Length: 151
Length: 229
Image 1: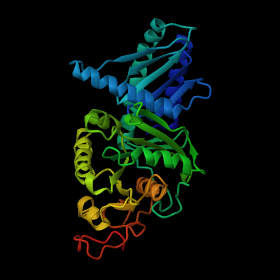
Image 2 (image 1 turned 120 degrees about the horizontal axis):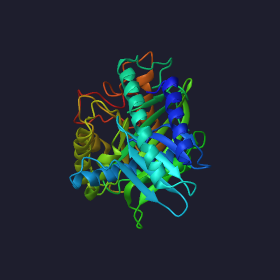
Image 3 (image 1 turned 45 degrees about the vertical axis):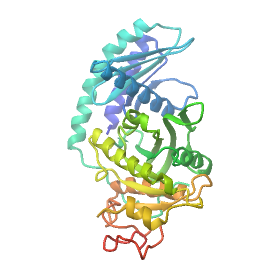
Image 4 (image 1 turned 90 degrees about the vertical axis):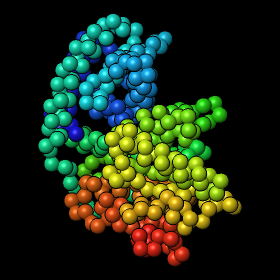
């Protein structure tokens, strides 16, 4: 669960990170593939698909790490011709996914990614504590009848 | 686990289609992608082998307005059915909110179906979950094949618990029962957010009258409740 304040705070951190690292797009994604917050521009890319694939890719890597006796690979880097992607593990089952191009380099992006993961972890810890004591979301309506139908 | 974003008024829910190899999980998603016209849908992504067998998962995202004041984003995943991909199935189940278990109606596939259902339960435990917590529906697929097992047999084999699940007959390849199955799973998930839950709100505690499986007067489950009542 993210409140509007949590969302703004996370997006602010991501925007600062992009500014410093000169990366193109960055997002907070959970390991189930949900997109929590994002900053930057990916053009027409479908962000749901991007998040699902990033989470899947990281999950497979995590499993490889386990089999090698590592508790986790803390970061995962895919190098392309023009665009690259860096995924960094966060606490609370989350990931930081960053896309960057030729304007910057992996060293710089990784350096600032390590910095932003610390502050994102703090924010996630706060959000998780709030969630534990929050009232569950309840809305008017009986959603077992036909009023809520996907067509 | 469902993710609620109060800032963008969005709820994200993950539904996983589970079942034995070649039972029709991917076909369900392909058909949904074709059939759904009103909900805003994303591209259907398949991580498959050259022979079109699911290697990691298939993925389809649907944006709907099924909850007042919120956009509901359903993320539909399939798992690879082949036995060797068990680790992958565990990974795809991470963060699952609801399950559609697809049963292949072919007589020869009963052992595979049963094994897959047991495997689902084991893999949920690996993810610290269980079918008691996670709403699920059953889909008896391939009802058009000549040697399909009778419904009462399938009900007895897969739906013989104190808390009966909703069950649907389907022919995923032609679209029969596919949307009905998804809508039942979606409603079970959305019912969690209802201020006025009725007796069916968990979807598991009592049979639901909307179920598509016909009454089975000779069903061995007399006393456990009739799913088609």
